[in-house]
Amino acid sequence: MGNLLRVLQCKEEALEDIFLDFENARPSEEEKEVFDGVAHVLSFAPGIITELKSYKGAGEEIRIAISNPSNQEKQADTWHAIIPLVKQLKEFYEFSKHLQKCVQELLRALTCQPLSPLQHLETKQALAKQFAEIMHFTLKFDDLKMNNPAIQNDFSYFRRTMSRRGMNSAAAGIDYDEGKCISTEMANEMSLFYAEATPMLKTLSDATTRFVQENADVETERALEVLSTMANICKVMLENPKPQGTSFAAVDDSRFQMGADTVSFCVRVMVGVIILYDHVHKEGAFAKGSRIDIKGSIKVLKDQNGKVKVKSLLNALRYTTKHLNDESTPKAIHKMLEV
Image 1 (cartoon, rainbow, N blue to C red):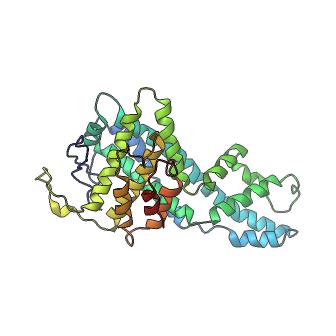
Image 2 (image 1 turned 90 degrees about the vertical axis):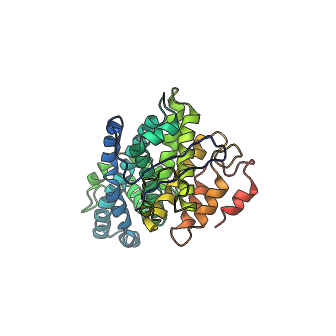
Image 3 (image 1 turned 120 degrees about the vertical axis):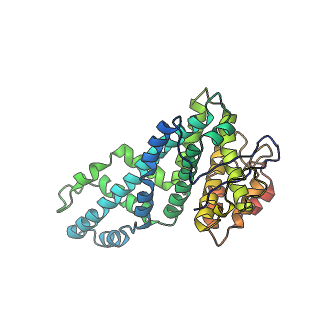
């Protein structure tokens, strides 16, 4: 994947040239503690995606069990097929909780005094890279989940079966103790998590909102500046795959290749950060006061059709943002988001 290096030109001219090397950035001593903690969590992300891609569900087993309610052998077979899958779903859910903490740690590091958020992004590029990686993972996870109805079907069957365990306590071959790997409280939380169209993004949006609300020493504007700057960097990268006019003459332009991986990365990060911004900003990402060029962002997203799954990302903007349906949102924005 090519470097995400762009000269960010903002219409307010409040931001100067920014160099963000998302590929090769290495943590400084100051970044290392936070970086190492986040890196440990992110090391599990590829495995999570691999497991989710291969998640086939137990639809056939569930169908057979429902069709043969008196056949205890078939009920037991289905139960044994469901338990490993539910343990996987628990793993995914627990990973989302770890990502929540990572996002909050990164936001604290990128917004703390005395440096400005912009200075943080320039001097803590390894942490900016990790933030972008979380966004990329999040949109990828949610896209896979959204297109796999077996996840909710399996978990619903598990909960129904556990709720009947008292009545079926004598059922041959069914070890209900296996289901105790998930407490009733966690089962309720997981049910809400998987009921979301984009559960991982909703989790991180909530975490970002809580971070701002619960940290009196962090000004909302500082968090918003981090989010809007990252969104704008990705937008400009997608608009202009070749750097022009950069003052970093020593950089080899041949390193800037907008291959499929780079486009996918940029698009998902841009969309994810826009949604986070919309949840934190009191008027949202679509209002006139937004620091994000939302029309330009949607346009550049739609321009990637054929390179990435644009429809799912447009749906993420439509259904997981907070302020899209506000009266202040221009009708043109709604028109642009039609899929």
